[in-house]
Amino acid sequence: MLVLETVGAKSGRPRATPVIYARRGDDLIVMASNGGHPRTPAWWINLRKAGEGVAVIGTERRRVKPRVVSRAEDPDAWRAMVAAYPAAEDYLSFTEREIPLIVLEPIDT
Image (cartoon, rainbow, N blue to C red; front, side, top):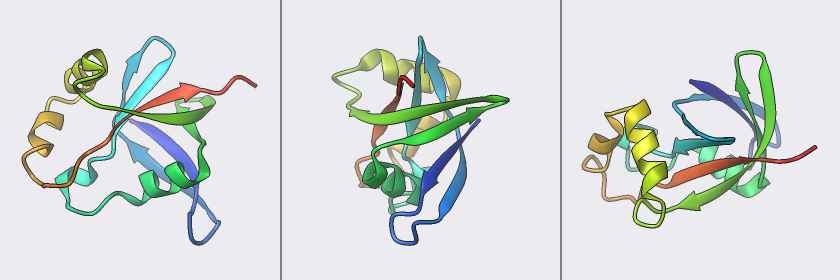
Protein backbone atom coordinates (compact mmCIF):
# COMPACT_ATOMS: atom_id res chain seq x y z
CA MET A 1 0.00 0.00 0.00
CA LEU A 2 0.99 3.56 -0.59
CA VAL A 3 -0.76 6.64 0.70
CA LEU A 4 -1.76 9.03 -2.05
CA GLU A 5 -2.00 12.63 -0.93
CA THR A 6 -4.21 14.83 -3.08
CA VAL A 7 -6.22 18.02 -2.79
CA GLY A 8 -10.01 17.69 -2.77
CA ALA A 9 -11.41 18.70 -6.17
CA LYS A 10 -14.37 20.47 -4.58
CA SER A 11 -13.21 21.24 -1.05
CA GLY A 12 -9.60 22.19 -1.75
CA ARG A 13 -8.68 20.35 1.45
CA PRO A 14 -5.81 17.86 1.75
CA ARG A 15 -6.81 14.22 1.35
CA ALA A 16 -4.83 11.05 2.06
CA THR A 17 -5.96 7.70 0.67
CA PRO A 18 -4.32 4.26 0.96
CA VAL A 19 -4.03 2.64 -2.47
CA ILE A 20 -2.69 -0.73 -3.61
CA TYR A 21 0.20 -0.27 -6.03
CA ALA A 22 2.81 -2.02 -8.12
CA ARG A 23 6.32 -0.85 -8.97
CA ARG A 24 7.94 -0.77 -12.38
CA GLY A 25 11.30 0.95 -12.30
CA ASP A 26 10.69 4.47 -10.98
CA ASP A 27 7.00 4.31 -11.85
CA LEU A 28 4.25 3.38 -9.44
CA ILE A 29 1.15 1.78 -10.93
CA VAL A 30 -2.32 2.08 -9.41
CA MET A 31 -5.80 1.20 -10.52
CA ALA A 32 -8.82 3.46 -9.92
CA SER A 33 -10.99 0.44 -9.17
CA ASN A 34 -12.87 1.54 -6.06
CA GLY A 35 -13.18 -2.18 -5.33
CA GLY A 36 -15.08 -2.65 -8.59
CA HIS A 37 -17.78 -0.18 -7.51
CA PRO A 38 -19.60 1.63 -10.34
CA ARG A 39 -18.56 5.03 -8.93
CA THR A 40 -15.13 6.48 -9.67
CA PRO A 41 -13.00 6.76 -6.52
CA ALA A 42 -12.66 10.28 -5.11
CA TRP A 43 -8.87 10.06 -4.99
CA TRP A 44 -8.78 9.61 -8.77
CA ILE A 45 -11.14 12.55 -9.37
CA ASN A 46 -8.92 14.68 -7.10
CA LEU A 47 -5.64 13.56 -8.67
CA ARG A 48 -6.91 13.98 -12.21
CA LYS A 49 -8.12 17.53 -11.50
CA ALA A 50 -4.94 18.57 -9.65
CA GLY A 51 -2.61 16.93 -12.17
CA GLU A 52 -0.26 15.85 -9.42
CA GLY A 53 -0.11 14.44 -5.93
CA VAL A 54 2.29 12.92 -3.44
CA ALA A 55 2.87 9.18 -3.09
CA VAL A 56 4.02 8.15 0.39
CA ILE A 57 5.63 4.74 0.83
CA GLY A 58 7.06 4.24 4.30
CA THR A 59 9.25 7.29 4.91
CA GLU A 60 9.63 8.06 1.19
CA ARG A 61 7.55 10.93 -0.23
CA ARG A 62 7.55 11.63 -3.92
CA ARG A 63 5.65 14.07 -6.07
CA VAL A 64 3.91 12.26 -8.90
CA LYS A 65 1.81 13.01 -11.95
CA PRO A 66 -0.73 10.56 -13.34
CA ARG A 67 -0.66 9.05 -16.82
CA VAL A 68 -3.55 6.81 -17.80
CA VAL A 69 -2.62 3.74 -19.81
CA SER A 70 -4.77 0.99 -21.23
CA ARG A 71 -4.11 -2.64 -20.52
CA ALA A 72 -3.68 -3.15 -24.27
CA GLU A 73 -1.18 -0.32 -24.78
CA ASP A 74 0.92 -1.11 -21.71
CA PRO A 75 0.55 -4.81 -20.90
CA ASP A 76 3.65 -4.70 -18.67
CA ALA A 77 1.93 -2.21 -16.37
CA TRP A 78 -1.12 -4.46 -16.20
CA ARG A 79 0.98 -7.55 -15.48
CA ALA A 80 2.80 -5.67 -12.70
CA MET A 81 -0.52 -4.63 -11.15
CA VAL A 82 -1.95 -8.15 -11.26
CA ALA A 83 1.28 -9.60 -9.86
CA ALA A 84 1.10 -7.16 -6.93
CA TYR A 85 -2.65 -7.66 -6.44
CA PRO A 86 -4.16 -10.67 -8.24
CA ALA A 87 -7.74 -9.65 -7.39
CA ALA A 88 -7.31 -6.65 -9.71
CA GLU A 89 -8.41 -8.83 -12.62
CA ASP A 90 -11.64 -9.72 -10.85
CA TYR A 91 -12.58 -6.06 -10.47
CA LEU A 92 -13.00 -5.78 -14.23
CA SER A 93 -16.07 -8.00 -14.04
CA PHE A 94 -17.69 -6.14 -11.12
CA THR A 95 -18.66 -3.02 -13.07
CA GLU A 96 -19.32 -1.73 -16.56
CA ARG A 97 -17.28 1.38 -15.74
CA GLU A 98 -13.91 1.58 -17.43
CA ILE A 99 -11.38 1.13 -14.63
CA PRO A 100 -8.35 3.30 -15.32
CA LEU A 101 -4.86 1.93 -14.95
CA ILE A 102 -2.65 4.82 -13.87
CA VAL A 103 1.11 5.17 -13.95
CA LEU A 104 2.28 7.61 -11.29
CA GLU A 105 5.39 9.12 -12.82
CA PRO A 106 7.88 10.93 -10.60
CA ILE A 107 8.04 14.70 -10.89
CA ASP A 108 11.64 15.84 -10.67
CA THR A 109 12.15 18.43 -8.00
